[in-house]
Length: 322
Image (cartoon, rainbow, N blue to C red):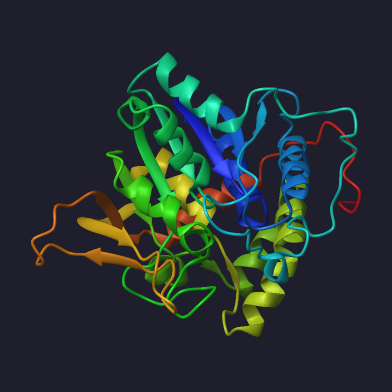
């Protein structure tokens, strides 16, 4: 049976690719898209969500719920210097569309409670919505079958500061609370996993471009600005932590190695805000998450390439995709 799924996202670049995974993979039953303050401006990421639903030929089929517009305790920090508008300049007329009336936090609580132990959540942005849902409903964590988190680094380098990965940095209090809330949690870290297994270099990007499908052209355009940024910081390719997270949730056979860790997040350090301390079992701490340590990089790339090769057509014209 397909996996009942919610993707909680700050929709830009690879978040859009992760949505394609949820929308196109036959193993996924995507019940909702929930948005949270993160990569780009809040209204922009809602438009990006609708844009991606359209690119997947699913516009109007999956509700988009607007969530928390700022972190729990801090001002919002964007990554627009990395992603631009998050859509590579693509646009679809969605002036007649609106988000669902139900707030994302309420939708998460309701969907998990309707079928306890069945719903999985891929949290690929800051964890503000997830923390708020756990606070609102103490049974939320138990009602969720599995929570996959794209966040943190395994005691490694960050991507917004030397110490911190973006999602944990933007709302470290939310990340800390979620990791202590009792979810069945799988963490997909930025370093070393993404940097070693989920970067698509020139040859891989050329292979995707050669597909020539609308989905492949969509991928190339939305990843363009981020590719330029990545190259400027020494990464010769596009990074895909969010789509990797969605793919691993649906296809755990892609995992080559993982282990149980105690994962905690620094909230008060002056230069270590958002740092994820992952204890590997020698410090007397109780494990609270499974951390993915290695994946089959080639199989992941082949998986995404197969999705992008499908002859799916947008339901509405996408300006810039010609």
